[in-house]
Length: 210
Image (cartoon, rainbow, N blue to C red; front, side, top):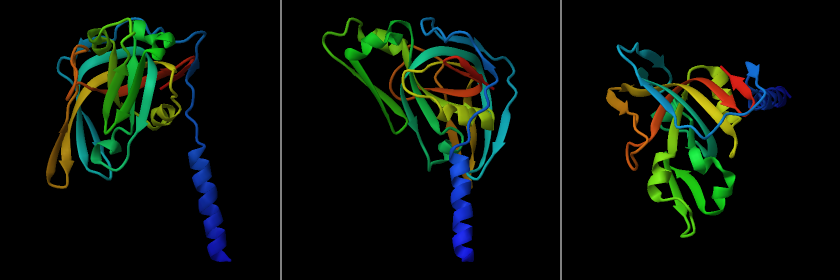
């Protein structure tokens, strides 16, 4: 009987945790505009952020102040590896002409193993260089628990705005030294072209989370 009661309590706790929602800081009258390019400003004399968790101890160093408004075309969650202890959610984002959902009949997007891929048809009205310069794969490090909950609420085709910093991460897993860098260009592609973002604010459609 006691075992059954314990199991029931654990089940209710898991249900409660799985249903936990992020707290909305503010409601807005509209949605983010996904047409402008991201804004980036170099950080001079950055102040490191120290994080310790079950995986290890990490130093997060801001590289540039960063803000991006975009449409979500793919979302992927990760667990297991050390970097997932900092960043569980990756977002493939598009802006400019790619933010028009009508473009999706010519192009498809997917994510795997923290990479982002796209494929487009011969009828696609834009060139490959435009896709490179107006889309990105983003590793999100939430600055607090509420933002980690908010990231879980993001869905494909949401219009979002992320404010925070492009960062690099160094640390130790036991005695093993690890490093995770960020791209600082919207013109690169392939390996090391993803943005690693320490998010301080997140807007999902008409909701702002901090």
